[in-house]
Length: 117
Image 1: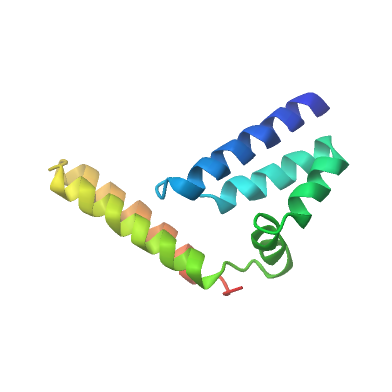
Image 2 (image 1 turned 45 degrees about the vertical axis):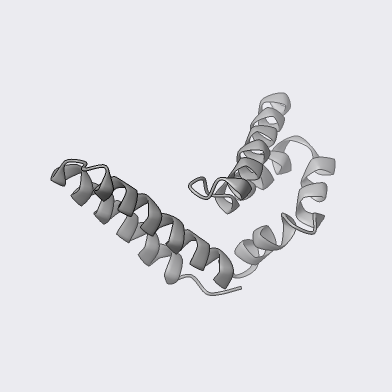
């Protein structure tokens, strides 16, 4: 089972790294999942992730206070607006746009009600 947890942790790290350069893919949720998986598979990988200068602070902020940094909130908001604008420009059906707007709106409400790191 430890191998499965480790594989899932590495997969989440890969997705998080892709999310750094691809603004539509969230980075921090994948880092949180990776920390969860590594805690169950490898103490060495877990410690590496938590102490990493780039990846560690968002995880520690979330664990300590459920906080998300202000720049992360801003980038997430810009990404959500870009995705929704693209959907409108592509001429998606109104029902799809309504569902997307409600879902993205709920995500933004959740994100902006979290404390800032």
